[in-house]
Image (cartoon, rainbow, N blue to C red; front, top):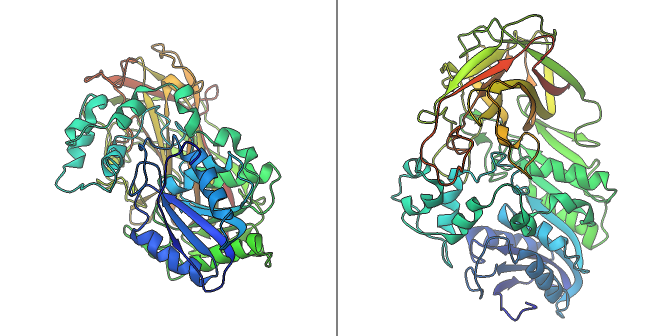
Length: 529
């Protein structure tokens, strides 16, 4: 590297040289199972595959501080590869999750030999996936994994107990180790200069290379992939492609996720998609597909080719929240309908930080949530529930989902967690997507604002994206709570320092739906064909 630090790499050659090269940089071990499989695939496709341990991990020298050196290091690795006699000078980058985000950081350094990127399940900028302003408690498992040069043992740890630990600052000790990287990350809020080296979405228009964006509707970092595709397309950069499947964070592994079977078309020849994309941009081959967007519509369990994201023929519809003041739980009187609200009383719920609303998920951060049945959670009195009538005709819900709500709280701070689910005739409430807003960040992440008791705030909760067919007899349901533990850390309601505090206060929250304050769910839909 430019500062003299040596990084270690494995290089797999195709039969014919020189050849274009594909670079993957990873903190998970260059000789791991995923790089080894990809090395064979790329070599068979006629590409040199270079897998490098990032700085401070595996066999690479230096100190590992997540993301901090990955932009300049990525530039230097790409240009080193391009200069070798076995390379044609054309280089692409490849990888998912952490190895996905650092591709963007490297691209911002503008390495001249970078011709294309294959970016999967990509994390977003800080505070986007964690709009509470604090890292998910479940990320402590990841910090344990990368604590050292090789993947660390994570068994025999009661992770759910660890996630309940207070204060957040010493959650690492509860898991049996000490991580200065964790502690430094949770100390910094709001969004300040500390986070600048990790940000790319605020500069994404500078990434002027073709990108194949890949993710799944149940990827716990899904929001970044379609947003990045849309931003680069809007910036006028040609060659952008989006592929969204019925997958979690580990894409294209199975036709099932949780209890849901998405059918035989769910698993595809992903390697073929990737190689066709690379052939187009590194070898001058034919276009990789008929249209830039390919999405899997769940329920219908079929792939669709689209011209853009969101598809241009989907129309925004508004479903208004209604009720007589008793929308608590799925047994209450909350409804969703296109009709605007009249003079309706507001709904209230009490958030107890000692008994937070749970988020259905396993204990591992490798996959946070999925198409889980949320009916049990929706039976709690501290969850507001609004449900449509059964649909008479099939309808496709495709695109971003958002909630506009009017809320107040008795506390100095609270969270508003919103979730969309698909309710079957038998009562199963399959999670589709969700989002959260922390009230102290209602005007952005650059500064924190205490809530004024009783003051009503109009807020917007981004609930990410979905592509789901709703069949006759099924219903859509919105539920609203003030916690989603352990996906998001619990708001203590004090308005104080969430990192060092250990106890909280009850928050009585109010949601309004009236003529003057029409809380509403906004979807994009089109008639099913």
